[in-house]
Image (cartoon, rainbow, N blue to C red):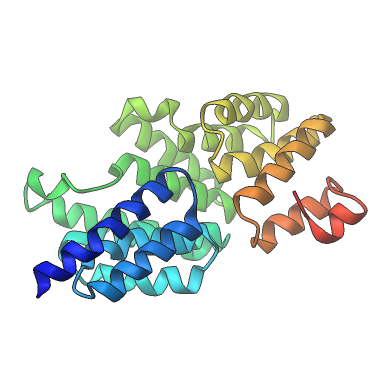
Length: 252
């Protein structure tokens, strides 16, 4: 019976993957929910389900699904990363810092069991350090943020070109050299056009640099990436980037 359920559910799982690849989050989640009904024992859909919920702004549901997945040893690190990312999406930076530090601590514990334990990690400890650095910076700990950034790049020099490193370099430069920060973010946005955090910072940096047209375009792209994020809407309104009907409705 279990094999029959798996066979019936497989086409819907494949459709979910295809929808996810083209960014159709709602379609992907719908197919995953069909898979769950057809084959409740299929635990491999927990992480993609939680990720789709997060993409759709269903943060409470995403957290609940990530917590369910975290009970399974093989999904522990990805689930903890997912929980930290949800806090980051919510702009709850104190909680994000705690959760990213929990990821790093769990990685250290697993690493002590041997190199095989690290093969399923979706990101490296150095990349986690970049997220911790960002959280520290967002709560006003610039010294700690710079230390974590330097440590991350020392552990893995290749991450200097990553989205996280570019974001942190720009944030640390912004108080003293806003133009340099803007240029770093602009270049990073070309490389990572769908990175929410880079786009968020570029929106602010472009406004500060007097690039109003670019700031408006970035603001609209931000809304498109995460329509339900009230913090984003507030930032956009505060900078006067959308006016009139756009400011009220924030429609792309």
